[in-house]
Amino acid sequence: MKLQRKNRLRALSLGAVAVTGALTLTACGSDDMGGSTTGDSTASANSKIDCGDAKGQLLADGSSAQKNAIDAWVKQYTASCKSVQINYKGGGSGAGITAFTQGQVAFAGSDSALKPEEVAASKEVCKGGQGIDLPMVGGPIAVGYNVPGVDSLVLDAKTLALIFDSKITNWNDKAIKALNPDAELPDLKIQPYHRSDESGTTDNFTKYLIAAAPDQWKYEGGKAWQAKGGQSAQGSSGVAQGVKSTEGAISYMELSYAKDGMTTVDIKTGAPDPVKATVENATKAISEAQVVGTGKDLALKLNYTPTAEGAYPLTLVTYEIVCDKGNKADTLPATKSFLTYIASEDGQGLLADAGYAPMPEEIITKVRSTISGLS
Image (tube, rainbow, N blue to C red; front, side, top):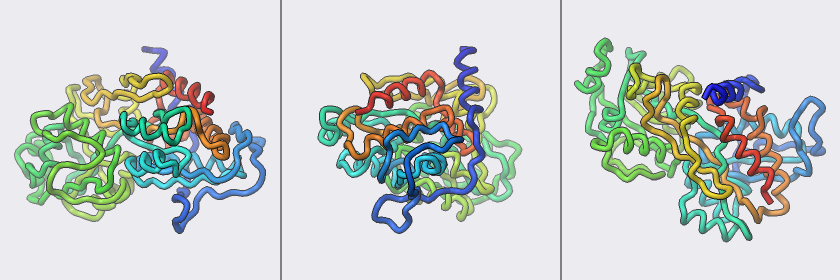
């Protein structure tokens, strides 16, 4: 365990680069075409990125939770591999998987692993192979809120379930008061926001509620929101904007979207103290994940009810979904080169500064080996 801990800390620190600016990337056919570069594909003298034979345009879609990470990676990668243009549209996990199984993108990002029927559909695109899940980005699902005068807030799974099921409707409710005896909770209507699109973030958030508050959350879960009431918005950026602009609002989003003064909830778990939504605390929980995929698939089973001190229970892992065999010849070199970079120590080293958690060393080592064998 000490060695694993050392490796995780090393992954957090190695190659950390301050991420400045944001590269806005959208899919082909939209107004903004990010990541476009020209020139040869030889890596610069100061870069460890191996461009190989990578060239041309790489289209991808999927998880909006990882888009800030993808933007940071693309900025570094295309600075070295100047013959590659990468366009990632963060249209949500559902949209990404659909685009992948229809053969529209080279790879997709999803905050949930492929379902059996999606694997079956992928075999039509991956000639002689199938789609596989490569865990690449981790992080906490922050619960952001906008309650004037309340700078610190503790909630547990049961209370969150009742809030997002519209059973607790006011911020001075006795259940919230019991968890926050020192807070000046206002007589203010709660405005819960959920995702309008099919989302792996929704899937992971509701898996947490199902696991930690089964008596309060009676829904099946999945990428589509099922509870009644509340307001909806498109993508992680949409729900984050809803919280920022609406007094009384609360929503779930990847931590990198909970910025610009937004306050996040501390989650009460089985540990003695409530746990903050931080990269480090998410890594503690993700380190308990188990690989449950078979063959080259590296799908993980997360622990949504950790009791270890400082382990944040509301986490997600974003997978890059790609064909293990049967990738298109014109995109395979760029796909392998880019995925190799983002799984490298340098690529994973960017994540902490961007608000994400690197994959534990024992998991990312398997990812690197799998990428090297893509064909």
